[in-house]
Structure formats: C-alpha cells, structure tokens
Length: 345
Image 1: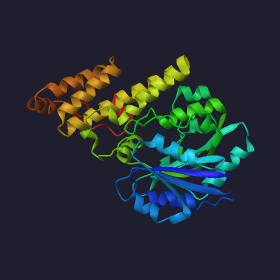
Image 2 (image 1 turned 135 degrees about the horizontal axis):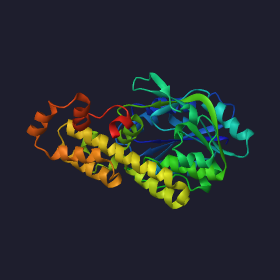
Image 3 (image 1 turned 90 degrees about the horizontal axis):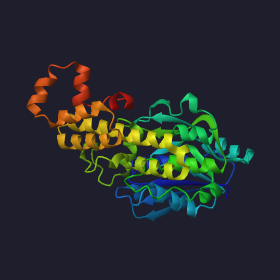
Image 4 (image 1 turned 60 degrees about the vertical axis):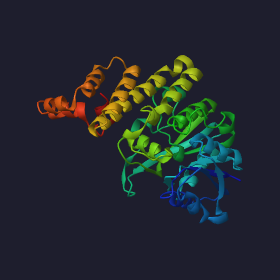
C-alpha cells in the first residue's frame, strides 16, 4: 500500500460526503486506502459514511478529540505515506499525484504540504491560505519563530515519521485541540525536511470571525453552542495553552518566542470573545474573558479599561457611549472587529 488517507470526523454530516468523495476520486497511479475515524458523532455522519460501503474503512470510537482520532487512523494505516484530510475539507483531484512524488524524490523529506484555497460556506474561494513569506520549505528555526501555515489536510507524512514522533499529542483534549497539528509539524521537522508544493490542492472551509478557530470549535464542541455561551472562556483556545507548554518543555529557550506567540494569541481571542459577549449583553462572561486575558497579558492597559466598562451599570455605559467616537465606542462595547489584530488591541 502506497498511501493511507486518514480522515477524522465528528458531526460533519453536511461535509463528510464531499470530503470522502474527494479522496476516493484522486487521479493517482499508486494504490491507496481511505480510513475514516468517526469520533463519536451524534448527527447523521455515520449514515453518510455508510453510503460508501466497502470503498472506505470506518473506525468508530467514543468522542475523544481530533488527536486520538488521527492516531487511531495512523495506527490502522497500511500505507507508506499518511495523507491527512479533515472531515470538513476536500481535495482537488490531483492532491496525491502532486505531493506523494515529492517525498519519493527527496529521501531527506519527512513531509510535504501544499498551498490551500480558503472557501466560504457556499464553497466560494476567497484567498490563498499560505502567504508569500511561507511559500517554501521551512527550517526548524523558521517554524519556531512563527507558526507555519501547514494544515493537516494539506500535508502528507511518511508513516515512519509519525510513528517516530508519537503521532499527535493526546495532551490536547477534545475541547483543547487547537495547536496539536502545529506541534506535530515541529516534531516532524526535527526528523527531516518538510517540502512545499505551491499548487492550491485543498479546499479549506472557513466561516465566522477568525474562521480557522471558529470552525474548529463549532465542529468539535459536543454542545454546538454559540461562542458567548462557553462556561469557560478559555475553552475555545485552550489548546494553545497546552501548545505553549509543550513547546517550552520540548524546545526550551529555542521555543520561547513561539510559546509567547501562543499565549498572546489566547489573550487576544479572549478579548475578542469578551467584546462579542458584552455586545450581546453577557457582561459576566465579558468580565471573565477580560480577567483571563489580563492574567496572560497584564501590560495591556486597554483590557483594564474594557474590564472597568463591564462593571459600570448598563445605564451609565449607554449614556457614555453616545458621547464617544464610533471607533472607541466599538472598542469598548463590541462587536469585535473582523481582523484579529484590530479587535485584540
């Protein structure tokens, strides 16, 4: 077996059919198998998978999260190469034919990733995922300086490499999974080179503000609730705190910059969640978000001002809002700006 396609899925009934079909219809000369790990789906995902019959292999497990799901697929795989594909993404027909040969030509490469087309809920493309400065094979130092935009769905690994690094860390829980792929890529880069293919070979579905994060939370949250209803305001980005800890433990001083980026990202997203919460009238959640953000970035004075805004009576904030310039009013009362940097400062 040349390639094993591993697809973890949880409650992806609207997309899993297209995802699996895009894997099965690859224009690839080598032998490949498709393994789908159903991570305890409670919707119509199992019925969608059953339509493919014996064209795919389905592994059912209780809901444990994306890392254990990927690891289960890797353990069952017979292929020399592992091509990952998330349950709400899809491939172009030449994904395998343009990536697998790269690994066969370069024995020093342990993985290869491609560019990605971002698409909205209707499937309309609206931009490339990989920015120009990342469109090359990275060094480990580059990957430790900034999170590298190699998505699981865009990457093919040597199976031996994934086994050597222990797969995807299961310290990321089913509710704290963001960052598990980036950490695995770092460990893989220690094993050898990671090549890049410039073609857009993946359709990456993004929706909501900060779509990458919002998509993951929506697809992995068993309760499927809105962002301001989280009991724990850190839950939506908790994986990055795990990521920061693991990077510091594994790479020491070399990993400090990337760990600080992760903590900073968490703090910014907590502010964004707080802005959305207060805009929707949930002052208690907004306060919790701001307090949590301050614990991570205590030097950002604007967050203290936003926290104070949540303590004032609504009648007072309404009166003061009418006196403030529109941008300052939005900075205090939400909703968050579309761009992460705008809404985080």
